[in-house]
Image (cartoon, rainbow, N blue to C red; front, side, top):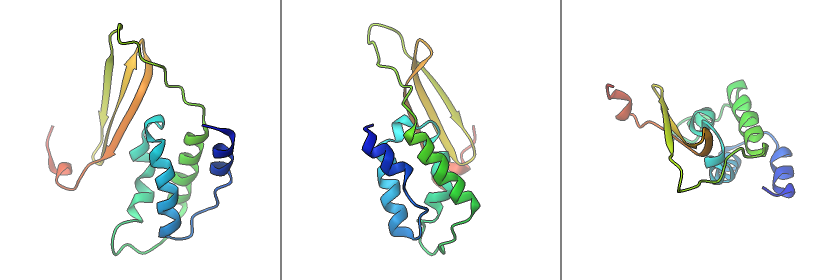
Length: 125
């Protein structure tokens, strides 16, 4: 990520409404594969996007916002893949999100995570 983008993220002010939140999450979503646990980090923020949910920016949202900004500004520790070497996939899930990481030689290649739908939360393991 170039210096200007890092500076823009660093200086991003606390969000005041849904329009600003959508704008910020649009940028964050572009970098999601570099952010470990992206879906879990964004859960308090995406809850504010739901229909009929009043805008209440509390401490939980502020913490999520700051952690996500920090994660996006950090240098990615992702390695380049080598197709001649074996890959390993590690997965994790909770009641609300699931995620995984693609590894090679125990170095992360890519992260993936998403929130579970209401129906998926009813599945049993």
